[in-house]
Amino acid sequence: MQKIKRFTDLIAWQEGHRLVLLIYKLTDNFPNKEIFSLTDQIRRAAVSITSNIAEGFSRKTKKEKIQFYYTALGSLSELQNQLLIARDLKYLPVDSFNDIAKITVHISKLINGLIKSLKIA
Image 1 (cartoon, rainbow, N blue to C red):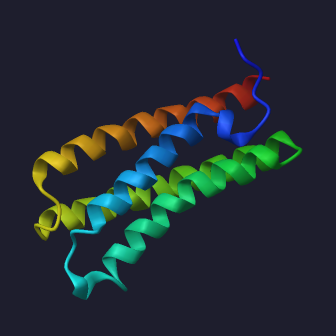
Image 2: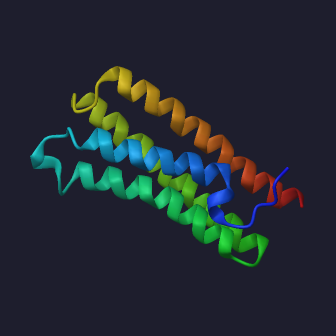
Image 3: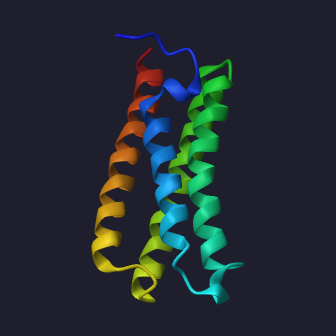
């Protein structure tokens, strides 16, 4: 098993990064009237997930790391809520929503794994 030296080595960050790229691609198709509202909020929430994982990784204490990972989970929940809104407004096709919802659940499990590993260690 390879030693984790950078935040980019974390699977949670890698999967989160893939999610960010997917979110940007999907929101490109949202109506222009949403560019400064729902589109922006969705993108910010997605970016916040990986940003908080990265910042948490660089913190020295377990308590600080865990706090940032919990913040990443909060951003993930925010994103899930916003995606439900986008689906219900018909900005996001149901198939795309279902695919991305599965990804968000997977990322949630990965972040919770990070938190659990710090609590055990």
